[in-house]
Image 1 (cartoon, one colour):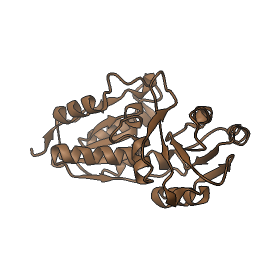
Image 2: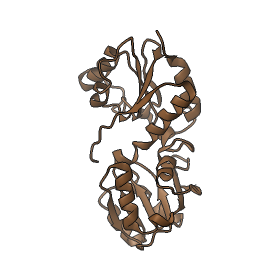
Image 3: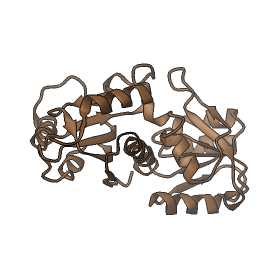
Image 4: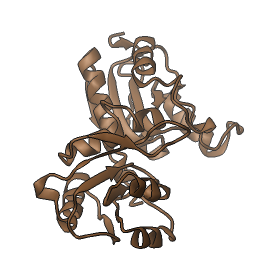
Length: 259
């Protein structure tokens, strides 16, 4: 069989992402979640380990075993019986000889391929520092708005174009954008952290109803660009890194939720 040893790829990922050091939710179970027969010939990146994403691998099989690289893994519902949709997902992976690797917070905060730094890079926002905290670890990045995005309407339009989303603006601050903070995913609870860091504009994926008033009363522009949309960038950057390290071809399979 051709390809690269799965153990070599996962060993690199574990060290590169520091999966044994970065704190996360217990059910995130970062790292290799489903093993295959031991080799991979290609990488398929997706945001979620959904049945739709697994079926999107195609027939695959021993002649072309893929590594499915995701941000949201298979085990979020905890230590449950291997039945129902868990069984369908695992069975679909095994039938394709597909390995599954998941990286949640380790991918969010990574300084090279992380969701936050990668979204900043795509927007041409220079990363000048970090803010906010998740379990004692700085998680958000911030930087000065480039001239082309120094007005909040243009920033929203740039997010829509870059991510293929329909971003929602809560106009809590000035129309003039100066300092932008980014925490991808469901980080509406971090508006206060953005305010405390002196940021006038905060980009994340989604937030609760009350965060509208957090934004308007604390004077922060908040842009909800979608949980899925903001977190599609990190797995792509990580897949590119695997290509550079091992020469594995890669592709991104898009399965947007609209959320």
